[in-house]
Image (tube, rainbow, N blue to C red; front, side, top):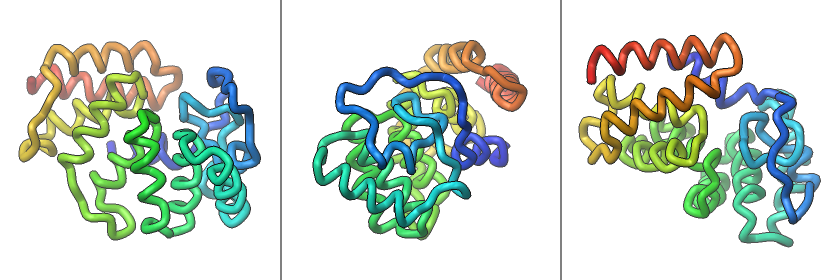
Length: 198
């Protein structure tokens, strides 16, 4: 199951799904660092292995200097730093994007806390809060990951904020968004576990 989750996070698809128009326009940061699954992206996605990391960092620094409060660009700068192994530089930008309501930023930051990646202190309760916010905004990975973690007791030490009814709704929404075999399989597996254990 973890392998499926990693696939959604770190192998950015170049899906033909179009992001909502952005009044601030496409930047070189978008071109070099967009994630294919980010609902707010305005440019095709770039995979971790395909990203020119130094160029992406430079472009995203320039873009965020001009637009410091743009949550999408701050997420992209954090993404480029994180893929470069620079978690200390990435975290302030990922935190900003998540706090500003960027659902991809919320999900990815939760993923980092959940796994304690790159020596970031593991904190599943922070992940719970971030994934819940992201799920409530309709981010596919959060819709499935949140109930997956609840069923497995991974949030047992946290104040789980979603009801069983809300989590069932998350999975129903995810089912309608599952556009390929892996998403359908992941959603079906989590739904079966959830229904058996709630």
